[in-house]
Amino acid sequence: MRLYDILKQTSENGRVPYHMPGHKRNPAFDYLGGTAAIDFTEIDGLDNLHSPEGILRDTMDLAKELYGAKESFLLVNGSTCGILAAVYSACRGGKPMIAVRNAHKSVYNAALICTSPVHYLMPRLSEDGLVLDITPAEVQRAIEACPDAAAVLITSPTYDGVISDVAGIAEVCHAHGIPLIVDAAHGAHLGFLDEHIASPVECGADLVIMSLHKTLPSLTQTGLLHVAGELVDPETVMQALTIFETSSPSYLFMASIDGCLHEMKHPELFADWRKRLSRLYTEAHVWRRGGVHLHHPWQRPEEVFAFDESKLILSCDGYEGAELAGILRKQFGIEPEMTAQGYVLLMTGAGDTDEMTDRLCEAIRHLGKHPRPAVSRKFSASPYGVVPESAMLLSDALTAEAESVPLENACGRISAEFVMPYPPGIPLIAPGERITEERIASVMEGINVVTSRGAFDGTIHVVKRKK
Image (cartoon, rainbow, N blue to C red; front, side, top):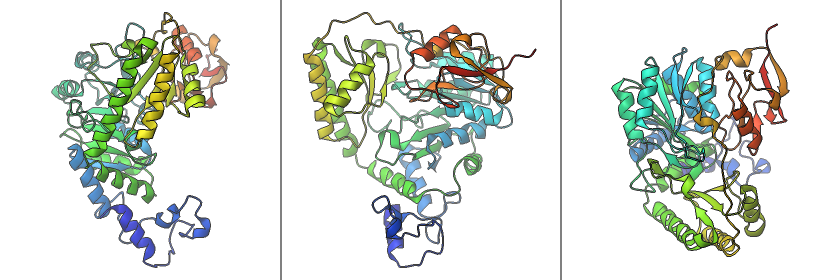
């Protein structure tokens, strides 16, 4: 029986709710179309996320069976909470960590909480400065430079869909007795959608964090944290989750995770997704003569280990990303995931419909029928390819006396805050780093840039100089 069915039965059994939540499943206070009726707390018969023995234990077992993990934990605070718990499990007490520089901000926050020095892995870049993958050889060199690292953390797939050789990286890490953490927030479908691209769990990673909601049919904020191998104790991870995950987990979220996992047992879920992707790629191929590209050659050099085909990198000769996004919104009612300088990122998912695919095919045809002369496109060098100077620990920079200065005047200063485009929430500048002209240029060229204080207003907090 699914968790949803148990919640529904419990709601209908007539027990008077002298317990949380305060809406008491009263229809007069149901603002969300019937969800209040199944919004419970940990009452008798509904199990406890932080001590699962019943229906929630069954859901965890289903997750680890589907992915082949040693243990799988449910996340109702998103992948952020899973990353915090994973890093804390391995690095608490100030142990150093090797991490990709293009990591999500939650990785930096985890290092801050653990007071861990971070030694950066720099991703490879295309000739145009776009972020590619991490290789096992690069991880080997990083471990040789930091042999006391308590963990290695990589992002695979990246926000743009670039996949690293997780199996090769895991082999390198394990040869040194170091656990591998994989932020696979965008990869919960790996191992299911494309038979040639395995899940990081299958590839030997020790801790894998996944957001179900990004590509699979589950509510926003739902995810999984998998433990595999012998280098990490599941009990240690469970203890970390009691710190970072809410003590009042939403049963709506957990029922959504449970329902999603049951849907994943049906092969047709992914077969239908593959058919829609095939239609989109076929349509784009037809209109290449009109300058339309899905996965433009500069986005997928041959040497990249693999690419997640469910991520659509749509570009069109002669169009900037903002103009493409405007056409998609205004003329076709399509909302892209992210807008960049020269392209838009469109995320497909298991919940896509044939009608949605029709709409995007129509947009591709429209762009192809209105070609523009191709222009030479040179992207600025990515800041993620240059090792930043870490002048201070994250924790020291965030607690140091700071002052606000115009960003253009901040070259050479030490940052006291994060500056990042959102989405995807990957810092261009992190606390403790010395700010360079290249970083300043990257921020100025960014779209939807935010700081630790909120929207970017042209200024940055920097560590105050001592007199």
